[in-house]
Length: 388
Ligand SMILES: *[C@@H]1O[C@H](CO)[C@@H](O)[C@H](O)[C@H]1NC(C)=O
Image 1 (tube, protein in one colour):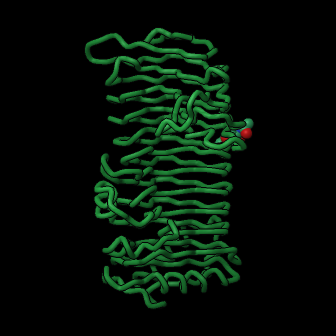
Image 2: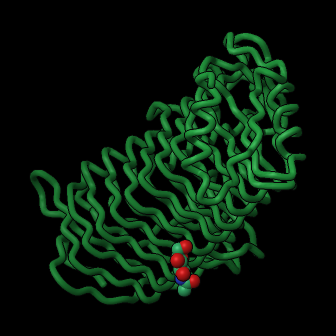
Image 3: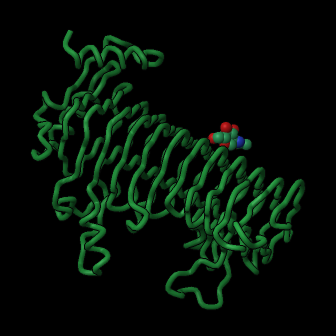
């Protein structure tokens, strides 16, 4: 048995809990992909995918070791059976960012269910694109590295994503998606390189993952519910954010979000809820932040309902209702004195905010908390002293 087949057999064995193991494997090299780092392999990838997608028994798309360059690729379903997308190699973007096109996507999975993406590195090589944006000259719109749209029952495990042009991973209009052992890396000064953005989706779990980015590590956007984040390391970056919410009037809300066992290191924010200062029917409710360590974080705990870049909301207040948010067992250091900041909407005060066992300090001065338009209660040990 050659090494690839052996490997395929092993992985197949691991996944055999839910796969049948007589599965065929579709190696992208057999479809014309070249592991030379230069040849555009996007069409070969798509051909291998289409063959796997048509298979009546569970199958594997296999990207062996080596560096494969691809322009934007689309893996679309529905497929006839379960697919394991095994990446042993590295997928890199074309050297010239102009070749990423205008679709906004680099690697896109759409309308698939029962998919496991396992292993691999994807490197969008975003630095020249960031440089273009910094100079303010005319740049293409840029792409998100990995997008999963209109899909269900997807597991992404052990993926490393480097230097995205924009967002590293996007999940939209999906159900039941698990991310684990992700490694998301971009420099702290790379613009809009958010780690993972979720919107209009339900049942998304992110665990045992590391995010180092130039923007939000994870952002939970409108229409998200039943979101679970556990064992997350974030930093540098802008923290974990719910929002921005309330950009438009008829926007879906966010409910049932948990962040537990997270460590934030040198991030701009820790746990944040953020909404536009505009009228909206959106909301954020049943949110829990617990067992969190902050290491030199600028704004460890923050609700900001006054967001309005460019001053486009004169005399408006946020219509977003923030309610039932629990903070417990949050410890560590803040770089600013104002370690807890609740700036809620004048027209829609925050309700049901609970704080329990918080200890956030700075090296030399006592920390403070500020409350505007917020109702709730506090218990246990609290540093800074509660303003609720
Ligand atoms: C909240 O979300 C979690 C994680 O997705 C899920 O297990 C739980 O059942 C949800 N709770 C409710 C009340 O829907």
